Image 1 (tube, rainbow, N blue to C red):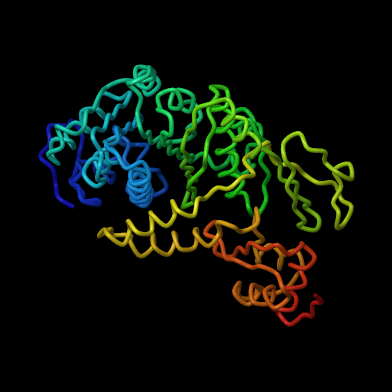
Image 2: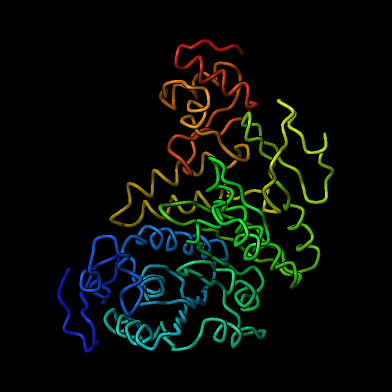
Length: 410
């Protein structure tokens, strides 16, 4: 890191990320105790931990550009210091223009400075305007963006409708949600208010978070007679991220809504099942395995949350680049790609062992046991201790017992 001699009225420094140099707030100068969250204390938001998110966003935008095979115009309506928008312009081939904006005057000034530092004045415009206001300015035909990246501090929901209106047909929308407490069921009322679906505090709550965000996006787009196609998603650190393309037309919207439904979960025996929207819930909502009452998450997205070709394009792109976090990204993408055809939800071995009062065996040993019994068993990027499987809950518990040598029958 280099000290900066910028004209800002707060301490800054130069950091290198991807192929660019960024003038950012010197975060250490804004915290009084280690427990404080530095990015929220600084006058302009910048989170170095989100470098991974920005790396993946660059790969995803390049993958999208390759699928449409033309120059693209991109918008970052919550720019902060402009890190994402500057990287898009500098690192994604085929970007014709990037429009950034932030409601904060200081953020807009810093974003403009970063555009200048990287010599991107002809490619990037940094404005000082509220996100929804700017997106509305670009909602008319022939003014719309090819791609929009929503990366808020909190929920993206307040910006979804204006983003959808500002995207052309087959446009690309990336959205981040960092409000994991509502999405993971700690504050269910807040989740219902914001995302229109009920969460559950289950061991696979991070997948539910992705599906609640995707479901909210699908429902919001459908009101505009627009369908969505989720091409990539992931959960990392303290956030979830959903990438989707938009398809104009009432029929596309109807097709999209067929991917909405519910996940039913039994907190007694770990059984879970999926029900499509408006489908009949059998057995009066009682668990098939133990007869207990099933808890319901949703409505949410129960369709695919990954596209095979899109994942392959992203893997190709990471191999072409020199990213600081390349090894982590390659491992994550490889794991994610293996989950494309996997069953919805996953079991967490530690959670099963806790309920069964058993010592915790290696996850791979449980997976091998399941495969030996004729079931699918895949690891998941959502949880290092998780296994995706088509095995029923009682078989999963038996596999854990066998893996620890406590006896189990298949």
